[in-house]
Image (cartoon, rainbow, N blue to C red; front, side):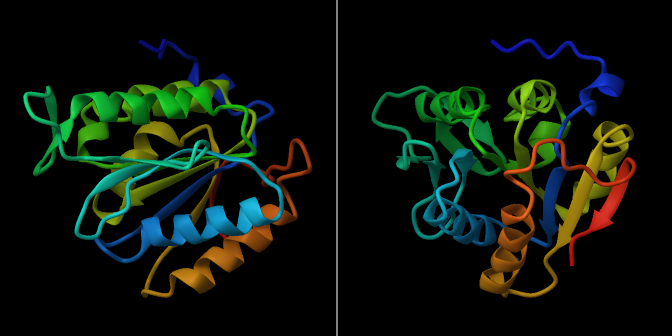
Length: 201
């Protein structure tokens, strides 16, 4: 269990900006992150956290270990409900643990922040803990439908960038974001001039 007691006004001190990748459902948010992870790792940067790629078989991708864990539970296995999915409780716990375990990696990913997190469930405790304890870049995916609510609740005192995906061109978006990170990830304390929303491109 993570401790989520925090002073939100102090969270921003000395932190690199939060990066929020947003857009409509199935616009390529996770695909953009997957391409970005490959670009970063090819340049020697470490990546942690979790992605949740879709396709025929939904699964968690634990980035630090490069392991894939299926959503589908085994026989007689405990499950948790996430939206329309019944997910292996064991694998979901491992995905949550990977966020906490990877706080020292160069770039930390959480995919995704959704309605479940807005109710304090899902990855929410790990997101809050990472927000407070991290020293790295934190990249989130967030559906456009809850973006305003998310920003109102969590970004009042934070430096953050928004990347809006307006078309399915994940390779271009990932390369543009990589260029931004490649120039910043090795420079401690790189922050935008004041708290607020900054479009990357």
